[in-house]
Length: 236
Image (cartoon, rainbow, N blue to C red; front, side, top):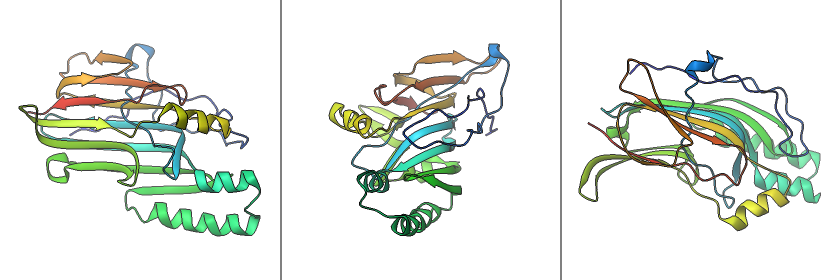
């Protein structure tokens, strides 16, 4: 499967909370406006989880034979570290030790790279994986107990075969409110290119690609109150 990065340049990082981020270097190069086919699919993390995707770019590709590519590039916030620093229950030495633990936790995944800690529990990471979903069955960023984005293959659902569900854990209204009250937010874009049959989706847009069977599903996440992205596809 040919991998095509697709998207638009991002503006400089806005304040996600009281931490100032460096300028965000986009994962995807600029393209002509007429060809802007962004996709966002995927789901974000529950508040009860340790990591909150504060700002990110993610792109997935899935062909009807089940071959996939998944990229996540962005900033995560370790909620426990952020909360402790905000309450003043963690000093600089403890924060430094915590960063070592975070680095080890993230980098134990062979698909992760580019870990860089900034402050207030916030760090940048790049994650990339590709392969055969029919063999893998489930592909999750970051992992099952830290689910931010997931592809799952199901042999049969309601009488239909070869189903792929792209989704993530949703946030309740109370959880979203709690994140905002902490001074945090979530913003990003997830893109999915696929030539599989689309059975269900809640994308912001669907764009056709001239000369190709594949389409781009597009979700943009302006803030934490956006609907959780989801798509259901059929292979073959």
